[in-house]
Length: 75
Image 1 (cartoon, rainbow, N blue to C red):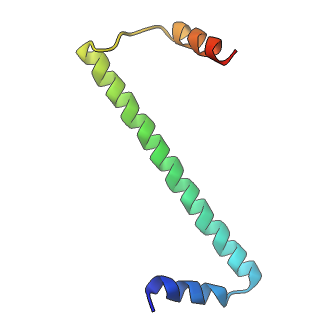
Image 2: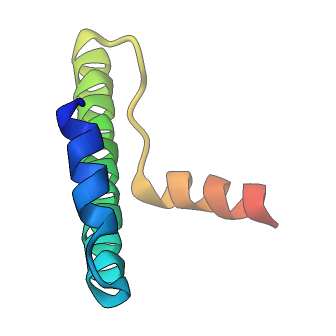
């Protein structure tokens, strides 16, 4: 029996309340990992854009221009 299968069998021996708590903890751990991965992806993208700006391959624009364009796109 694999360690994962043993854990599953042990978990099924828990009360319904204990299983619900365990399930909640496991789901929350997945959500945290996903948030951390998304945050890292945004950091990587920001670094990529900064490097491209530093090389002159993308232009700079003001925040007001960027927000105006974003608002236009969602209207």
